[in-house]
Length: 428
Image 1 (cartoon, rainbow, N blue to C red):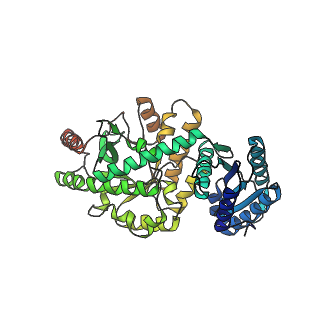
Image 2 (image 1 turned 90 degrees about the horizontal axis):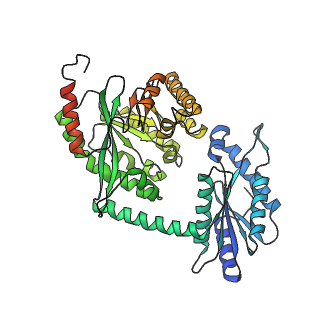
Image 3 (image 1 turned 60 degrees about the vertical axis):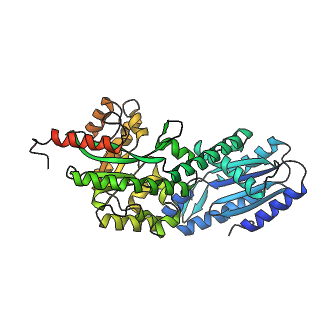
């Protein structure tokens, strides 16, 4: 399709270069920014046409001593067999991004794309074709995290950071298997009435040094989707008897446990029943499933099928990070949803940045137009709560109302809440 080497040809060529050269080489890993949104909006035929044009443009601007290949999808790799002059390496990378960024016509529409590039210079001792490509890919992710349409170089500091993160992830996996990661619960309220309407199940890592790592800290360690899937599975296994016990005690009518599906999922997880297995033995009508765009991109059709079946059984489905741009918003028409969620980033800036207030207002209106509920996470101050209520978002969660707590603390809170509202005739 692209006229470039395939994965096997590229890996073989890189292996040969590593065995022959005595000086440094450069491996550039690049992909098309938001390529999936082009496939989704214009169709896979347009995506294939784009890849064909990109392959031609890459070949056209490469100087002598460079080899280009396509790993798959929109991922391309360029190898320079002489990287002694870093300025020359950067000049080639910039030439590539400028060429890729030229407008082109797809299915009758003028389209402009951009590319992010990660560069690894090496080899170091024991570096292989696979590790060199992996290092360049790590630099690519830094370019993506920095805002896309960027070039980043894999530095010794990045290498050290990767090694540290690898050690942390292995430690996290051992702790998950040892039972040191346990469920905590953060209550959720109807801020217009004060009613307790649910609780989010959160993972907490009880470290041997007595400290507690929260979910956000663990997510920075869990690079591998398999680790995230294992984390969700273990936490739900421990939460299952808690849910049954609290249900037997008597929960407020309509009370639901909010569950974050893994932030990244392997496509296999949607196809082999793994996601459904997290909830074995739990009444689906007690669940709200929070799903992230990154978790479904590998298999949108498979994810939509699983979520549709869960909804038929009574679970609710909520799209997280719905205000983070067109790609996430496109999930609204692809997934079976009951709710969209205002994330803490927008809540944090709600009272200080007019643009964020406008985004939240647009999300609430969009939810209303589509017949979806809307909720907010990370509500920390009374002014944030008031602003959300004024915009029509009444379902709140955050430290203003309650911090994450153990199962026994949630049980105490539920008993106090039931007693407090016992005389309220509006309470179901």
